[in-house]
Image 1 (spheres, rainbow, N blue to C red):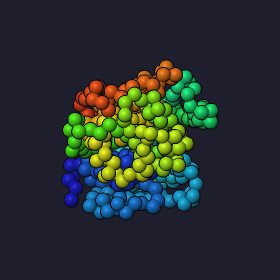
Image 2 (cartoon, rainbow, N blue to C red):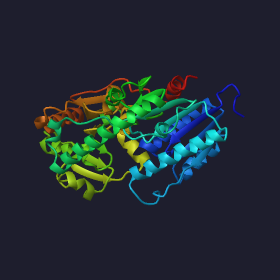
Image 3 (cartoon, rainbow, N blue to C red):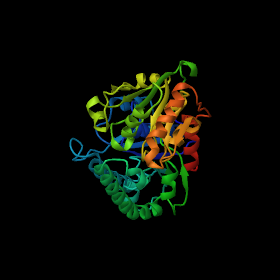
Image 4 (cartoon, helix red, strand yellow):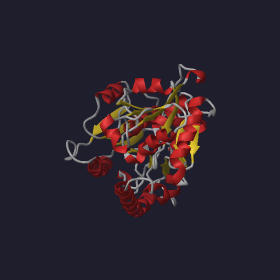
Length: 384
């Protein structure tokens, strides 16, 4: 039985929640797993259907109730439409729960982690509960000079993304300011966007227990590993060009998509480029301890989990001075300045040359992304 000394109720909004995944689903699960021991009673509002892995884990938690909120767009439709409809349902469910006398001491919205889309908190009356929003991100925008090295369609899409998100944010943030006690930003870019809130803290949406590499630094393979979705903003085009400019014989290894998908960004059949496709998580984690470096030259990544995982394995992470990748990697970040854009690919190549030959060493403390450290942060945010 839960201890009666603990607060009575937590309502957790986690549109995405799955213990077997990273990114958004992993963030939802991390918050549920970490926060549940702090309360006697926890209600998780999430999307339908619920993953079997989540249900299996919740069965071991005596104080957690899962409430799924299906919408008309669950089977088909873009994810943002699904999320928007889910937000409406979550706000309505919370209002009805209050009318039934089901009150919570803390209400926390954790996923999706968008700082421009409204959360259910914004659609309700000022709650009697203590309210927390985040971690959220999305306020990172690459400089126009950097976009100039990308294809025109991507430049147009980035300008459209900036226009839409900045416009919507101008309407939604003032509403959130009136409804939110603590706003949590994924990185410093997002923290700057969250001005005017009662309290703003910076903490990415990750819980990562300690990983240990089986290989010593001298055993590292001359491989630069990219792992992620094959999307333009991930900087894959920059990496393929960098491999062409490299002076050393290292291999660029691409994980997360097919050769056909990655070929949208350059010649993946060229010497020194290898596509591994979609790799199982356990296999990928093992690979992180074998390669010389992980490369994530994203132009607006709010909080790349793979950077934190690589750092935990003692593997340097080559990234740009944009977004939240540097924060996730901590002392193992090997930061390349994005500007001037004309020489960026050559400078990325030179940095990987040094790391794969052992001529340059990156080491430092890995950030403390453990469950214990996150629980301490949650207790502060919840005023427990």
